[in-house]
Image 1 (cartoon, helix red, strand yellow):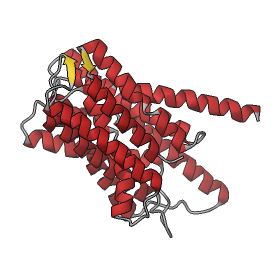
Image 2: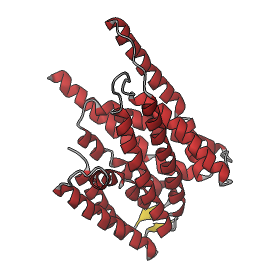
Image 3: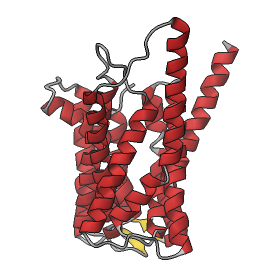
Length: 313
């Protein structure tokens, strides 16, 4: 019992650290002097190393277990690989649209609207999978959408943030689009993790992350080239920022969250991860003078309340 309590405390500390790492994402994007899609490419590129180590460790563990039991090690199916690649396409789209939206609106708006992804996952389940909506989902939709309209309406009135950065409805809508793309990524990832049937083994988180990151990097690079973006960071600051994006929010943040997922309920983890909004907004205020208005804070509280209500227990 004492050992279990200690493991849960370690997991809680890990998810708090994960939220702090992921909260650094938006400020680092601001410091990266390259195009939106190019930033996404470098972010995924520098995260490939840790993903390879994770995938290799999973492969070794699976092969060792198969050898000990005398069984034949199963291989992933083509369907699983294609689903993982589809998840990567959605994740690449999420990065491109979010980075573009972040360039056109405040950090607070971008982070608050970007976290609508969880609400959209449940909405897709209702509309596409015909899953019966619960009372909690309906309340979550009302809260989250009301908060979204308040934030976007504030941008339309020119009252989003005091200080350094102007806001725009287009930027806000792009961040909502990024949330839709990330929700699609979450659903595709869920599908690939459940696709192991018959002679196929379920893909582990490391392999899914590796395949999705490689695919997302290709999507981001192709978009950056087609759009004529600045591909290479123009300064040491920009280079360090994209390296930091790959290692801190992507590798460390997601890795710590994955570690905690095995020891804490998903609902607890998902709610604690909302700390990323506080971290991101606080860093933006300190580094760039972005102070959200009271209207945005009020709308943000509704969005956070809606996301919290929608997340599983």
